[in-house]
Image 1: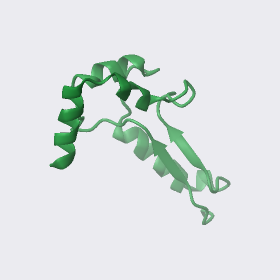
Image 2 (image 1 turned 135 degrees about the horizontal axis):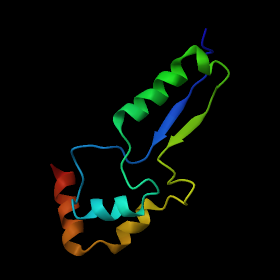
Image 3 (image 1 turned 30 degrees about the vertical axis):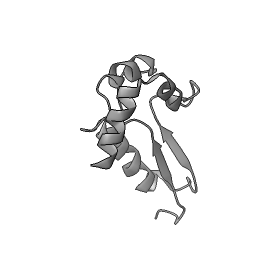
Image 4 (image 1 turned 135 degrees about the vertical axis):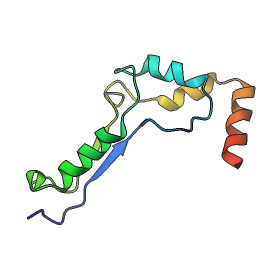
Length: 97
């Protein structure tokens, strides 16, 4: 039986239908160690493992699932410094929807 510990997965960038600026996506992918976004099934597989009896001894952990970004220093927010005013406006409009 699974122990009642609390586990969580810290997913960084996972495929989705919304991105504030499509112009930002190629740069984000280029800087990513795996050159791709995470897939939903990868996150689901981690969640299934953490809920399974195979993970009985894992308790109170936060598993980072980001394709190696954390090991590389994360810093995905550093890229925001390079956005143009127009890109900031685009993100602001998307946020207000």
